[in-house]
Image (cartoon, rainbow, N blue to C red; front, side):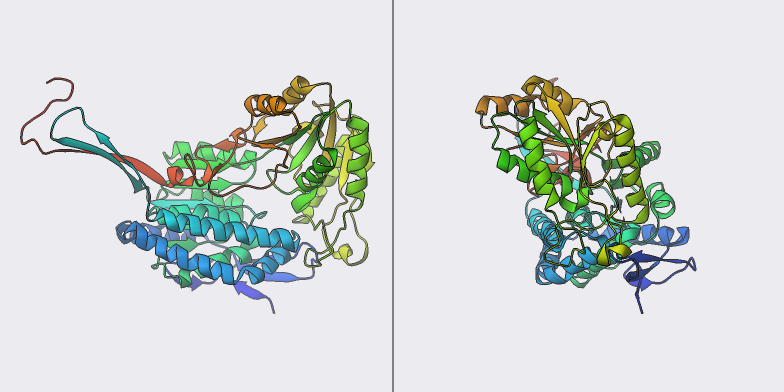
Length: 495
């Protein structure tokens, strides 16, 4: 019998007040039900927000180092349960086990990092222009935060949001993807067991179009952090601004890798395979466009095709698997439609292009790694986010044209350039219009001590993770304090 997955409201695990449930299915084997999940009613969200609001009064006054100690305890448990959690990620989401373990490791890293921020959360002390007066700025929490997360990083992305929100002194109502509700529940259980007071972290399950939207527009919410599609993120951002809520949205990408004529082609092929087909292309950072100098275009294409043809499709729990399933049937059908669009637009299908139903894969949502060549930059498959194992190879005559092609998209998340010329790499990092640029490395892989996020239609508001401009800026406001100990009225700029 499948496990029943419940909401957590004010420290209590609660079942289906709505009377409805939904199933979380293993995308590699649809006969495997990972969990039967509570579908939240609006009343559940109301109670979760109220619990968070009441808990905020005390939580914000707990010293930040003490809040950090709770996160440290959670990080220790995450590390001990890494293998178990990684296997659950693979079973519920589908990515291969090595990537699933990396997903959990990101959560471990961000939890340790944000735990240490409990002893920093630094502001500034600034000299005053007046005698016997001092000035300082401090970070203060915002209040109740709504955190809405996707399915493709079911442990890491929730941790990227929850940990900075909590260490900053906020309370949280967390709505994970309905496709990875079991992973989200395990993370919340670990945080509760680490010693979070009741009501500080609340968990509500449900679909984005009802539970998520109701939560995001709730009058008791002060801030919203969302990761998902551009269309949904922009809609939520408009609603948030109407409700005067602080908002951060990490959204889509149509990321390009530039491969110059002097590139190490073996290294570039490795990066292209990992960027295009890692996580079955289901990453906002996936490299779905390869922009290749015309002098090495044919050679690179042949090498890339050969490497992709060796990728093994299957259940991610099998060690030999390189490419797992897509998350669900709707996503598989969407990717297959884009493959047909590519053919209709005149792109040349080099490899793949079909659903994969051999052997045990017959019960899952698998698509062959797919490569299109002779792609024009204006084709839909080169402009729209497909979120699957489909890569477009585009020809460029020189670096200037390659950069222009890379920038010719509504997205601005991440890019990469392969070149052995330091001057070309300098020009590329300056002129490519993305928030993140990799040099001689693929577009997949972020380090948690630096901010992560995009520009243009890839992101709205503050970035994620650490460093200046990262998540702490999302989950805190600045308060400036002046203290005058002169014993007399001093009028700034007037005395």
